Amino acid sequence: MTTLTAPAPVLDKPRGGSIAALARHSVALARRSLIKTMRTPEALLDVTLQPVIFLLLFTYLFGGAISGGNRGEYLQFLLPGMLAQSLAMGGIALGQNLNADIEKGVFDRFRSLPVARSAPLVGAVAADVVRYLTVCVVMLAFGMLMGFRVETGFVPAVAAVALSIAFGLCFCWISVWVGMLVRTPGAVQGLMFLLVFPLSFGSNVFVATDTLPGWLQAFVHVNPITPLVSTIRGLLLGGPVASHLLVTLAWMAGLLVVFVPLALRGYARRA
Amino acid sequence: MSDFVVRAEGLRKRFGKTQALDGVDLAMRRGTVLGVLGPNGAGKTTAVRVLATLLRPDSGHAEVAGIDVLREPQRVRRRIGLTGQYASVDEDLTGTQNLVLIGQLLDLPGKEAKRRAAELLEWFDLAEAAGRMAKTYSGGMRRRLDLAASLVGHPEVIFLDEPTTGLDPAKREDMWGVVRNQVTQGASVLLTTQYLEEADALADEIVVINKGRVIAHDTPDGLKRLVGGLTLRVRPADPQRVPDALRVLDKVAAPGTSAAPDSSAGARPGAVSVPVTDDTALDEAVPALRHEGIEVVDLGLHLPSLDEVFHALTTQNEEAQKEELV
Image (cartoon, rainbow over all chains, first blue to last red; front, side):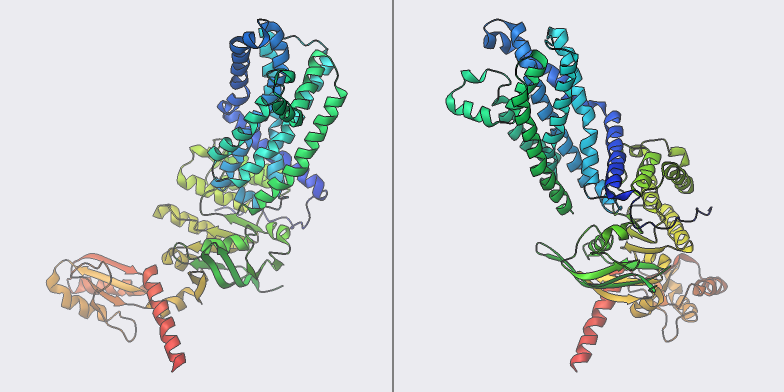
């Protein structure tokens, strides 16, 4: 057996301070998640094929009935909303994956290393950017094939995509938290669907809010998906943006403030 | 600097109704191997998880490399390597990617992380498989990768939780070689095992844990003296020669003992056994048996099984308590 190299002196503090270390470790762990994603492209079905099927289904099956025959106009209305729905759903897989990793003991190794407690979760969330970007590109590209047109311009469209991804990154912390709490990946999916379905259907995604009964309108108005959809519609089709954007940003901040600490606490307790 | 690189006092941990640790004291000298021996559910893994900063005990105190595990876990983490009971390698990553990731998380500069990964892969005989995903590895290869991952940061203290469970005997001996090599390079190793044989082969001192309590702490030799030590078992091909075999084996018996028909659990009829002091008894017994023309079908040295160790330790414990009462 050969002799191994002599150990370097042990550092007591991470290089460059704790914030820089958190960023560096999160990037390393995000890269790990990305490699896993690239190795299993079938894990991207929920952000590629699924939104496309939903788009086809709602445009051609229900679209005519909902819009009174004008499918083209309905697609313009539907697509920004469906983008928001797909983002909310796209976060579910993250909680499932983290749950599976913890069960397999992979995270035990990370916990025995001198990295911030939050780094494995922050890294996993950061890697999810790729999935949300995929959702946006697939939806817009396929939507355009079906006849969708951006009525504003390139810059507002890019802003819509950026906002969508940012919202996805905030919303997925709910999924991360659930992933820390429950025992199996299947349970993560079940619970998250129970949350995402009412949020995405009880909103302005599929139909105009004023067609709904009063109590449902009340729910739609307090639903975080609603301002997001209104903002994306404004950015892609024109119309007011600023007020919807403020409410959306407030929701995003709220999601982070509540669910990041909850997720971290859940992670710390999951021994 | 303290002579002890791991020290734990009064560790207690309860999971629901199970008292996993019920006041565990441990001490491991720098540069040695401490074997933690015990059956399933004895609390070995819980103890390792506490020392490796993965689990907070309900009460008690622990120091690793002179640092308080509960107060400064991050400093402890820079000095330890952990290999858990189940190989926790990332299956979708290659061998290299697995080790480079650990290096990055240990703040090694990029190049150094790659160099160290290559070095360890070479050393663990995984160089050829370095670019393959870990899910394609055999069980033994995964174990080796897992162990390599715990060595990336040149840890001062290495925790191995049942490192050879599920490995075949040849792979087990390979793993033992790795552990011994780490110790010659200055590391201290705490390993848990269910096999007395493994603890005997590796450990400088052995702690026996049962039901969350330490029931013995001794050197392997001390433990063997406590529980009866080595036995030489011989089964003559011809049962008629048993008396002759007994006479021959009496000559190699440990002082104060004698050969007798083998009465241990699972013994074959016609086998004889004799307590011996060490394995040189084998060198004497084999020519002596041949000289007498006794043909044997089975011959070997045996350590007491873990069951026998427990039986001996618990009986002794009870006797000691009785004496105290008197």
